[in-house]
View 1 (cartoon, rainbow, N blue to C red):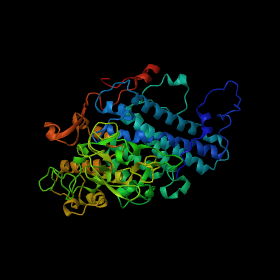
View 2: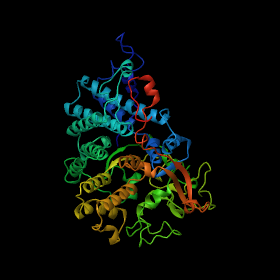
View 3: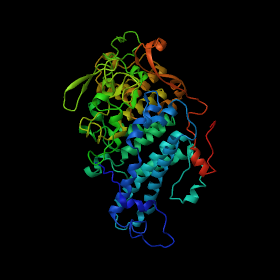
View 4: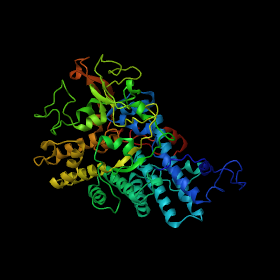
Length: 533
């Protein structure tokens, strides 16, 4: 497991003071003393991984989309963006901007100083450089998909220099991301080549999968197909496959399995996160800061592969969770849910109005939608909430979904592609009905697009990708305008009795890009603002 070390020595890397004296401070490391040994170089790159994502950012981002709602103070900045009640002064925008550029700066420091380590084996040096390039590309990937064109900073710059940066075009940033990932790919090992102590570091497969995701977000369908096929056909970029159990994929006992391409690594006891606290029912030690939406629940098919509103689905509004896609139970806790506790015993979680401590409501620790999150439950967590569970950023299922989407957009989606992608995902999920597994040859491109997008939504729910998807598909102004709902309570006759939870607003003239944070523009006069902000 990759050791996410908080390296005290690394403090010296971000200090640019004391240069006039040219003396090393006696009480802390500095650039004059740090870059001496192999351990210095390895620790510096290891520290760069800590900038990827913290656990709260990873999970609260789902509430930016129509998949979830957050009522917690921890997520109030996310909630403001989701309902359109924000401007360039929103602190979350500043956090994303500052955190990503802090990560970029750390990577730049590695690339600027690693040649000073004379004892470093050349092959290890190139691998460490490649890791830094991959991580720097990841940060720019996040920035460009939120803000559009951003300043391109490839070197360590001074505070005075930072006041004069300008925005590069989106095209320039995207090209830079691909160039970085190409260089990283050349010198990164495949996933099976790392020693156990280095598992979690960037690999050839991670670089290629991130390239595919960038091509996907740019609708460059031929390049998506070309890139995903390398991961799907052969071992040149690593060895990956679907883990046999969808629910098991997210369990501590199955970490670092064959489906994981890149994740944020945590260590039980020594480094944990508390996102479980925000997800699970209060009777099980949770707080319910994040609640799945009725819209997400409705997107899960019935066990015969039909949409719940479709003739022949067999769906019954009185027993809405029966005979559904098995991924529903693996992901979402609903009324009547059979919850398996840490000691192996089972209890029923009831969420309907008046059913007990877990019932739908707006109190401090209950769910306003009637749903909790099951996906990341770790029964081995300390005090039921402090978990060391790794958080997956890229997995092989996403590669299959990217491939399927690109093939369909190119008009090349056929039974062979279906069998390699959607059918495999459904079989792994637990579908057995022929109607759910057969290629729907009677559908055109638009009908297949609906199937692929729905499959992507339920397969990757609560993995932080839905917000990006609805924006790149240009449907955010459809799904983020109007009420987000919870379960049916009949507390009101409006919306057929489904609970109204949050009124969303998305302005297509401005909200497809976030505004450049005002605090950054106050410091840097050259940063032009995005349209209509």
